[in-house]
Image (spheres, rainbow, N blue to C red):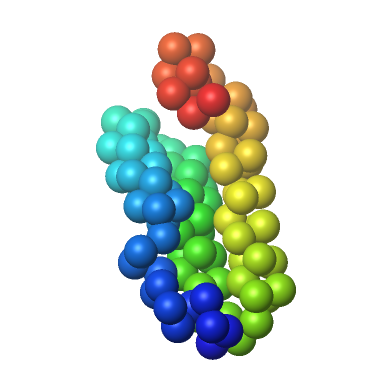
Length: 101
């Protein structure tokens, strides 16, 4: 691990706490999705949002700062897939879409 990872540890990262809150929000939001979307959109959204804190944690354990920044870049790009996925669902309302934006 590079020095930054030794000093702080992933549990102290503010962004990890925010990403975890987003995971909770998406899980709460998707529990009311139609049953037939359980293995489709629901699963995709949940896996997608869960990968954000997982990439942060994995990056924190990196051996170099460059590698850590690469994981943060992946985590940062991931949320952009959610609005696209939700726009494709006929049962998602514009009001609920505003939660994601």
